[in-house]
Image (spheres, rainbow over the protein chains, first blue to last red):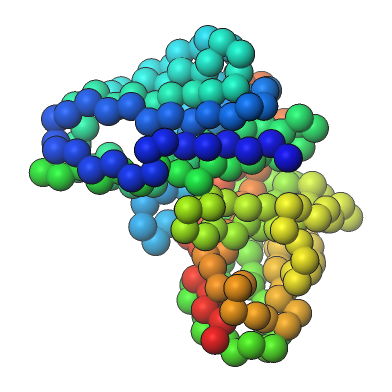
Length: 111
Length: 116
Protein backbone atom coordinates (compact mmCIF):
# COMPACT_ATOMS: atom_id res chain seq x y z
CA UNK A 1 0.00 0.00 0.00
CA UNK A 2 1.38 3.38 -0.98
CA UNK A 3 1.22 5.93 1.83
CA UNK A 4 1.72 9.67 1.94
CA UNK A 5 2.76 11.55 5.03
CA UNK A 6 2.34 15.28 5.49
CA UNK A 7 4.08 17.63 7.86
CA UNK A 8 3.46 19.55 9.89
CA UNK A 9 0.01 18.33 10.88
CA UNK A 10 -0.95 21.80 12.15
CA UNK A 11 0.54 25.20 11.45
CA UNK A 12 -0.52 28.57 12.81
CA UNK A 13 1.26 31.68 11.58
CA UNK A 14 0.82 35.42 11.35
CA UNK A 15 -0.24 37.19 8.18
CA UNK A 16 2.76 38.08 6.03
CA UNK A 17 4.95 35.15 7.11
CA UNK A 18 6.31 32.52 4.73
CA UNK A 19 5.76 28.80 5.22
CA UNK A 20 6.51 25.43 3.69
CA UNK A 21 4.54 22.22 4.09
CA UNK A 22 5.74 18.81 3.04
CA UNK A 23 4.37 15.65 1.51
CA UNK A 24 6.57 12.54 1.73
CA UNK A 25 6.45 8.90 0.79
CA UNK A 26 8.73 5.90 0.40
CA UNK A 27 6.93 5.14 -2.87
CA UNK A 28 7.28 6.64 -6.31
CA UNK A 29 4.25 8.35 -7.75
CA UNK A 30 3.64 9.07 -11.42
CA UNK A 31 2.06 12.39 -10.51
CA UNK A 32 1.16 14.33 -7.41
CA UNK A 33 -1.58 16.81 -6.71
CA UNK A 34 -2.20 19.46 -4.06
CA UNK A 35 -5.71 20.36 -2.92
CA UNK A 36 -7.04 22.96 -0.51
CA UNK A 37 -10.15 22.26 1.54
CA UNK A 38 -12.11 24.90 3.42
CA UNK A 39 -14.58 24.13 6.23
CA UNK A 40 -17.88 22.76 4.96
CA UNK A 41 -16.59 22.22 1.46
CA UNK A 42 -14.89 19.57 -0.61
CA UNK A 43 -11.23 19.74 -1.62
CA UNK A 44 -10.36 21.92 -4.61
CA UNK A 45 -7.41 21.13 -6.86
CA UNK A 46 -4.55 23.64 -6.77
CA UNK A 47 -1.94 21.99 -8.97
CA UNK A 48 -0.71 18.75 -10.54
CA UNK A 49 3.02 18.00 -10.86
CA UNK A 50 4.20 15.21 -13.11
CA UNK A 51 7.94 15.47 -13.78
CA UNK A 52 10.62 14.86 -11.16
CA UNK A 53 12.14 18.19 -10.12
CA UNK A 54 9.22 20.14 -11.55
CA UNK A 55 8.39 23.51 -10.01
CA UNK A 56 5.06 25.21 -10.54
CA UNK A 57 3.98 28.61 -9.30
CA UNK A 58 0.45 29.76 -8.63
CA UNK A 59 0.61 33.40 -7.50
CA UNK A 60 2.15 33.24 -3.99
CA UNK A 61 2.18 29.43 -3.94
CA UNK A 62 5.18 27.44 -5.20
CA UNK A 63 4.94 23.68 -5.64
CA UNK A 64 7.89 21.36 -6.15
CA UNK A 65 7.98 17.67 -7.03
CA UNK A 66 11.04 15.82 -5.77
CA UNK A 67 13.59 14.54 -8.25
CA UNK A 68 12.75 10.94 -7.33
CA UNK A 69 8.99 11.63 -7.45
CA UNK A 70 8.59 10.48 -3.83
CA UNK A 71 8.00 13.84 -2.19
CA UNK A 72 6.65 17.31 -2.76
CA UNK A 73 6.56 20.67 -1.05
CA UNK A 74 4.24 23.65 -1.03
CA UNK A 75 5.71 27.04 -0.18
CA UNK A 76 3.49 30.05 0.51
CA UNK A 77 4.98 33.51 0.43
CA UNK A 78 3.46 36.30 2.51
CA UNK A 79 0.59 34.21 3.78
CA UNK A 80 -2.84 35.79 4.02
CA UNK A 81 -5.90 34.84 6.10
CA UNK A 82 -7.53 33.61 2.90
CA UNK A 83 -4.87 30.89 2.70
CA UNK A 84 -6.35 29.27 5.81
CA UNK A 85 -7.50 25.72 5.18
CA UNK A 86 -6.56 22.07 5.03
CA UNK A 87 -3.89 21.31 2.43
CA UNK A 88 -3.96 17.78 1.05
CA UNK A 89 -1.48 16.07 -1.22
CA UNK A 90 -2.53 13.14 -3.39
CA UNK A 91 -0.37 10.80 -5.43
CA UNK A 92 -1.49 8.69 -8.35
CA UNK A 93 -1.03 5.04 -7.43
CA UNK A 94 1.19 2.55 -9.22
CA UNK A 95 -1.69 1.14 -11.20
CA UNK A 96 -2.53 4.59 -12.50
CA UNK A 97 -6.12 4.09 -11.46
CA UNK A 98 -6.67 6.24 -8.42
CA UNK A 99 -5.14 8.77 -6.08
CA UNK A 100 -3.86 8.13 -2.56
CA UNK A 101 -4.36 11.08 -0.21
CA UNK A 102 -2.18 12.24 2.62
CA UNK A 103 -3.71 13.20 6.01
CA UNK A 104 -3.32 16.92 5.35
CA UNK A 105 -1.76 20.00 6.94
CA UNK A 106 -4.20 22.33 8.64
CA UNK A 107 -3.01 25.91 8.16
CA UNK A 108 -4.29 28.88 10.09
CA UNK A 109 -3.16 32.36 9.08
CA UNK A 110 -3.94 34.95 11.72
CA UNK A 111 -4.57 38.59 10.75
CA UNK B 1 -25.69 25.53 -9.52
CA UNK B 2 -23.01 23.25 -8.13
CA UNK B 3 -21.55 20.71 -10.54
CA UNK B 4 -21.41 17.93 -7.92
CA UNK B 5 -24.20 17.77 -5.36
CA UNK B 6 -24.66 15.49 -2.39
CA UNK B 7 -27.74 14.74 -0.34
CA UNK B 8 -28.28 14.86 2.51
CA UNK B 9 -25.67 17.33 3.80
CA UNK B 10 -26.08 16.09 7.35
CA UNK B 11 -27.52 12.86 8.70
CA UNK B 12 -27.91 11.34 12.13
CA UNK B 13 -28.84 7.68 12.30
CA UNK B 14 -28.80 4.79 14.76
CA UNK B 15 -26.69 1.67 14.81
CA UNK B 16 -28.12 -1.02 12.56
CA UNK B 17 -30.07 1.28 10.27
CA UNK B 18 -29.60 1.22 6.50
CA UNK B 19 -28.96 4.59 4.94
CA UNK B 20 -28.20 5.92 1.49
CA UNK B 21 -26.13 8.90 0.49
CA UNK B 22 -26.74 10.28 -2.96
CA UNK B 23 -24.50 12.06 -5.42
CA UNK B 24 -25.38 13.79 -8.68
CA UNK B 25 -23.14 15.53 -11.19
CA UNK B 26 -23.72 17.76 -14.18
CA UNK B 27 -20.14 17.69 -15.46
CA UNK B 28 -20.71 14.81 -17.86
CA UNK B 29 -17.82 12.80 -16.40
CA UNK B 30 -17.72 9.03 -16.59
CA UNK B 31 -15.60 8.53 -13.47
CA UNK B 32 -17.12 8.90 -10.02
CA UNK B 33 -15.80 8.17 -6.54
CA UNK B 34 -16.87 7.89 -2.92
CA UNK B 35 -14.43 8.83 -0.16
CA UNK B 36 -14.65 9.15 3.59
CA UNK B 37 -12.65 11.67 5.58
CA UNK B 38 -11.67 11.21 9.20
CA UNK B 39 -9.54 13.63 11.24
CA UNK B 40 -5.86 12.86 10.81
CA UNK B 41 -6.47 10.21 8.15
CA UNK B 42 -7.16 12.23 5.05
CA UNK B 43 -9.47 10.92 2.35
CA UNK B 44 -9.84 7.18 1.91
CA UNK B 45 -11.42 5.62 -1.15
CA UNK B 46 -14.52 3.50 -0.57
CA UNK B 47 -15.73 2.69 -4.09
CA UNK B 48 -15.18 4.01 -7.58
CA UNK B 49 -16.87 3.69 -10.94
CA UNK B 50 -15.29 4.35 -14.32
CA UNK B 51 -18.60 4.09 -16.16
CA UNK B 52 -22.16 2.94 -15.55
CA UNK B 53 -21.27 -0.74 -15.89
CA UNK B 54 -17.99 -0.59 -14.00
CA UNK B 55 -17.93 -0.64 -10.17
CA UNK B 56 -14.78 -1.25 -8.14
CA UNK B 57 -13.94 -1.59 -4.48
CA UNK B 58 -11.59 0.90 -2.95
CA UNK B 59 -9.37 0.73 0.11
CA UNK B 60 -12.19 0.51 2.68
CA UNK B 61 -15.30 -0.98 1.04
CA UNK B 62 -16.38 -3.32 3.86
CA UNK B 63 -19.78 -2.33 5.23
CA UNK B 64 -20.61 -0.22 2.18
CA UNK B 65 -22.26 -0.79 -1.19
CA UNK B 66 -22.83 1.46 -4.18
CA UNK B 67 -25.13 1.84 -7.15
CA UNK B 68 -24.41 3.70 -10.38
CA UNK B 69 -27.90 4.44 -11.60
CA UNK B 70 -26.79 6.60 -14.51
CA UNK B 71 -23.73 8.48 -15.67
CA UNK B 72 -24.79 11.36 -13.48
CA UNK B 73 -25.77 9.48 -10.33
CA UNK B 74 -23.71 7.41 -7.88
CA UNK B 75 -25.16 6.46 -4.51
CA UNK B 76 -23.48 4.99 -1.44
CA UNK B 77 -25.30 2.75 1.02
CA UNK B 78 -24.42 1.70 4.53
CA UNK B 79 -26.17 -1.64 4.90
CA UNK B 80 -26.15 -1.67 8.70
CA UNK B 81 -24.62 1.48 10.09
CA UNK B 82 -22.16 1.28 12.98
CA UNK B 83 -20.63 4.09 15.07
CA UNK B 84 -17.17 3.85 13.47
CA UNK B 85 -18.76 4.82 10.16
CA UNK B 86 -19.28 8.28 11.61
CA UNK B 87 -17.34 10.48 9.21
CA UNK B 88 -17.49 13.08 6.47
CA UNK B 89 -18.33 11.48 3.12
CA UNK B 90 -17.37 12.99 -0.22
CA UNK B 91 -18.43 12.17 -3.73
CA UNK B 92 -16.14 13.18 -6.59
CA UNK B 93 -16.02 13.06 -10.36
CA UNK B 94 -12.98 13.04 -12.60
CA UNK B 95 -12.22 14.52 -16.00
CA UNK B 96 -9.75 11.75 -16.80
CA UNK B 97 -8.84 11.77 -20.48
CA UNK B 98 -10.09 15.28 -21.14
CA UNK B 99 -6.82 17.14 -20.59
CA UNK B 100 -3.39 15.89 -21.56
CA UNK B 101 -1.78 17.70 -18.62
CA UNK B 102 -3.58 15.65 -16.02
CA UNK B 103 -6.73 14.62 -14.28
CA UNK B 104 -8.78 16.79 -11.97
CA UNK B 105 -11.16 15.45 -9.38
CA UNK B 106 -14.17 17.62 -8.55
CA UNK B 107 -15.58 17.08 -5.10
CA UNK B 108 -19.07 17.61 -3.78
CA UNK B 109 -19.66 19.55 -0.55
CA UNK B 110 -19.76 16.43 1.60
CA UNK B 111 -22.24 14.63 3.83
CA UNK B 112 -21.60 14.69 7.55
CA UNK B 113 -22.84 11.38 9.02
CA UNK B 114 -23.24 10.59 12.69
CA UNK B 115 -24.06 7.03 13.72
CA UNK B 116 -25.29 6.75 17.29
